[in-house]
Amino acid sequence: MRAVLLAWLLIVSQPIPFCLGLTTGEAAPGHGGGVTWPAQNGATLTLRLGAASVALPAPEGFGEAASQSEIVKKHFSETEDPANEMVAVHLPAAEMESLKRGEVAEMNFYTKVSVNKSLKETNFTAANFASVISAFEQQGVKLLAPNNSEMRDTVKRVEDIVNSRSETGAKMSMSPPQYLGAFEQTPNVYSLIILARLSIKSGAEVKEIPVLCAASFVVVKARLLYVYVYRRYNSEADLNALKDFSSKWTAQIVAANRA
Image 1 (cartoon, rainbow, N blue to C red):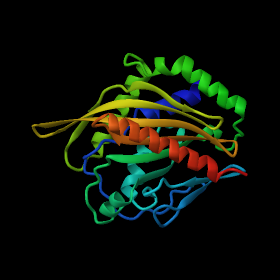
Image 2 (tube, rainbow, N blue to C red):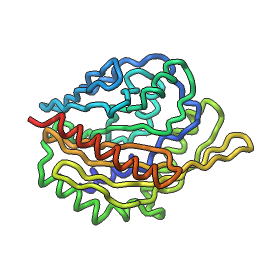
Image 3 (cartoon, one colour):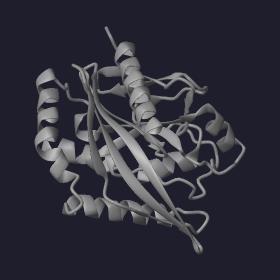
């Protein structure tokens, strides 16, 4: 379970930076992987993971972006941990419209869903889920420590990838993520909060951007999903809003997959 935990934590440490000139590019075809893509905001994806068909409803007011933007799909796929596969990225409806007009995406609030490649066709039992939670509680905080070599290497890799794709010449650096604690545990969901601090340099201007990530293990149809919600942090109100949003969406995902 350590390998599963590490692949999940490394994605937690990878908030896609804001204001680096991310625009829509050409419309993207579905990227495969057994995913049927919707064409409108608020629709539901069908993830075919081995013998299981998993429903992934969009959060209220959001649309799936990777199927509609080649740049979004490529950017999020390239920063994915190699052990995982990105299956969805959701943006607010207004942000989707901005992308379609070719405008720069600010990415102040968005989601990402991934699956572990080795588990896509494997039944994930209640015992497996309990083992992952136990492993995180025993090892996760250590893996997230600033002096952990795996975490430092991952932060450096993401910085290099993102900076190579900047269209504006802006450069990003990122501090190691800070663990703020777990906030939800149910039979199907385990969620925690991470805070990362981004530094964006454009010419002589340096902008500091704190980013919150609500990261969840979600088990539905005997499959494990990694569900992330990222939000720019300005005040405690953002933290509370993120927790509420994440809890509502993960409950929506679980409800959509009840037999």
